[in-house]
Image (cartoon, rainbow, N blue to C red; front, side, top):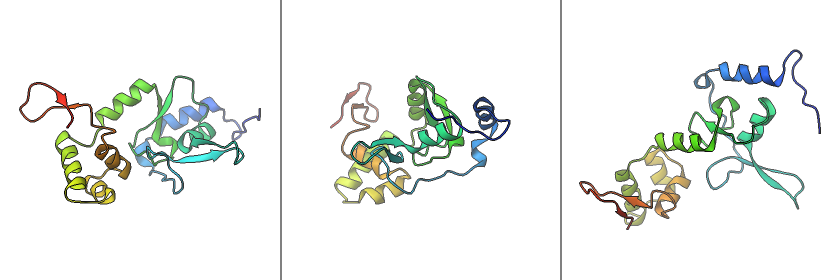
Length: 166
């Protein structure tokens, strides 16, 4: 295993402390201009062509610049931009916490989700146009239209009981 080389007098622990002290809002997002996966996260193939493994770039950069990601933790984007690879914009949290934060930060309401489905279905808007209008990714629009997300149960206005999505 190769030994990590850090600037003189710097250890992985001190680097991690320095990164935690930085205010992520003072640094812009670094947007990866190459391949992304279905969820909008930047990916890079690692290894030979025949045996390549796709790795998420924000995880690779965090490992390289800040240090290993402990088992049971994952980087959470503080900027809520999955295309960002700036390691300062990530914080290590458990999967449960990452999901909880994602739900809190939801940009859309049920009313907007219904409108997205209507715009794409009846009014023939493209994924790109709808995504731009609601300031979300094309992937998010596709997942909504295909009922991959926002699909299980929803409540109609004024309705007390939950019912299945139509």
